[in-house]
Image (cartoon, rainbow, N blue to C red; front, side, top):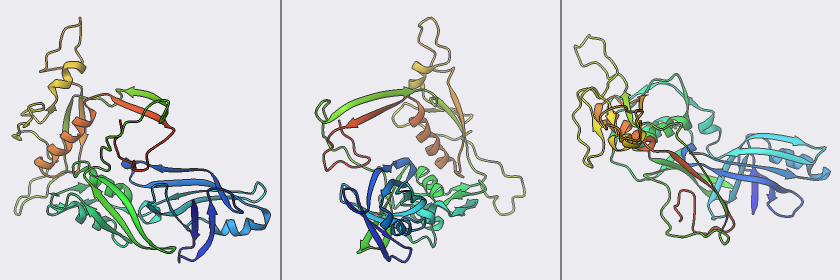
Length: 340
């Protein structure tokens, strides 16, 4: 695998290889985490005294790295950090695909004055960054949202937008011509990946599986509070943040219950996790919930309910993680895909 290093004007400064060569990369990691949005690449470039100056110029912070990953996908990164040690003959660096365009940029409080689509929000927060909307799997859904925090990075803000659109997932992609990026895209997915219906076997495809779990963030009820809506014309009274108190809603699946005072309950989860389990008896589903008080940016009760419901579904059960040491991964499996 070859890595092309350019300056910020796309002039090629040098090439490093993942194998043998006068300038090559070792101990590299290519990290992708859907919830973080961005992709991080780090590695160590080995060089000789004769190539020291060249490598220092190549891997300087602010420069770009372009390569194709093991799945053949074009990747564009901005070097965010670099450490050059001529005595050891090593340069370590860390690069991000969101780069300074979205990581260093910050945005302030914002309140929409009308329902907007996810693309409209993202385009607003990444203005002048060079990023455009690519794939959009939820073009028609609109919500009126508000952010009251002093500042967020542009990356954190668009991830917050995605979360409030039914936990949509974002992915960056790039179109390259030679060593130049001609288009930077933010792709909006309902969910990244598909079920590949592929089974991996221990001692054949998998070296080992380490299972871990916890209930640190488990709860069975949620009391949500939203943002503060704008006052109607002529209304001089003080506006308060919205809640779900008095909101009428019935779960079409019959599992979740919204009380008149605005608490969303999961009676099914409460059967196992009630705070009043004693003597082996089944708890009363009507009480002893583990309640979480959460604050959201939503300024309508409908959108506040959806945000709270999404979080309750995510946290009404233990977190179980499987760390898998894979010996052989099929070529058609990518991040977000499901295997068995």
